[in-house]
Image (cartoon, rainbow over all chains, first blue to last red; front, side, top):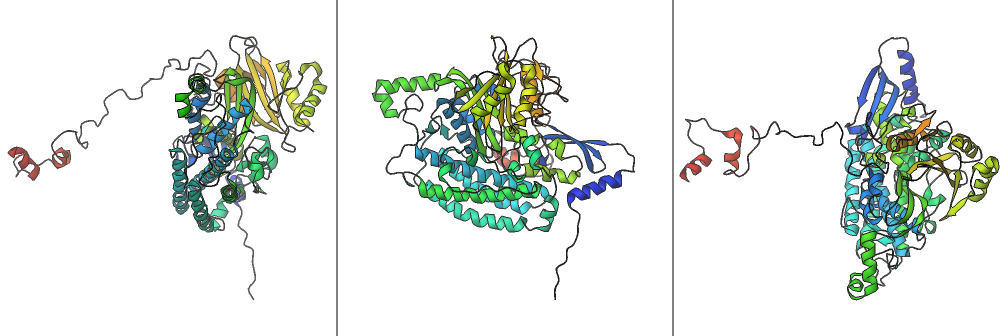
Length: 423
Length: 204
């Protein structure tokens, strides 16, 4: 009779601890190693100054800012609408989600964020979920590649191309989408778009299964990820982590559920949470989030007002001449619309004085915009709460005690993007 | 408990230091009169639920006194209550206590504000620049810092000289005969039979 036998192999954290112990009696100099700013595992231009004792990290000091462009300063000097293209360049793996987050923040200042036309809300939700899948796919592909599983990268990139095609069909651009406008969308989606989304959902789930068979029970993958970079629930909240990194630590917090915006309250989806808070949990949470995104997309396809082709001409923008641009025929034939267009283009959307904070559940975490307005068409101060920036601040605490070879794994599991971190 | 009740709890504890809660677009803001007390207020807020610091932001009220406004966004992850805590700091002082011991996420937020706005945090163990480089002399998010920037010691254009490999030997030059003639690596020896492309050129 076959018997099951447990083989005990120390997990990576214990191995690292063992290595520290072994090295304790050898007196040598500590070495300082600069990892980055251009290192393939740092996903951009992150530099980490590592202090090493042999192969064990004793101190880690992340150095960000290599991609700082002064987005917040730029925002103070242009109208609300003009800043939309800059949001594409925050988390450039999910520009559609950034567009939606920013538009909702300005709409909250205007007081119209819950009065958006239903079709607009559904299209925005679909854009956000496509962006989430796209971002997680790249994060997963790069994560697996840094850990040595190159095939995954090829699989996930093939699927991402399809999402780029969808973004291109909707907005005309693959990467710098700028799809939203204050008070609505740039335009409705083309008639065959929903059909394409449906096809994508079907194909994607198959590919996701395939990807999962390569990783989830892969011995090497599990050994390298489990019990590494453990973030406890308390620590995750204390460090202000958000998104899958927070949920990976077992905190049941998702802004789509906790502070529902758009039409998320009409949709059914689950929030996956981790139990240990290690790299493997964060990986599992992202995998499940992609499935839930597909679930949301399919519900949206069923429920979208106006149907797939929108023959009844459901609006996708608020019909308020002081917020959204009027149609061109009206501008050319009517005085009032001409004035509205002129005012909107030259002075921007006239926002009331006041201050709002809007947090959006982006793929990387909570992307928040704090807008301080003194009235008029430009923000007095616009602060971007960048989830990648805050998620990175935990590195200095997470890395000491790990081996050098664990660094790409921890970085991959945190899934950050420097364009957003450095703003 | 609502956000308003939460704000009133803080007000009950600190009395006149905290202003009446203001509501705008469903968000509750309270103003703290003395910035020196920010640590105590934050510690109290955490003790009654606000375990998550969403964000710290600084606003430059250029031309007005006091010049700086600090904005803290607090959240309780248990019940989702959010409040905004604001406090003013004068330009002469430009300093207030750190809240790092309350929430460790404040570390990078405060470093960023020090870097971009030039407000210092007393008690912060590691107040270095974070986005700009060490030794940069200005605080670029201040309203009196020009959008176009100010000159620094670093060169404006990174490459001003002719690139070392320009003109060859492995770089083909534009607007010469044909691809073979342009290719510098296949030059034939002078007294050898001319290549096909060269013959064509002689014929021309």
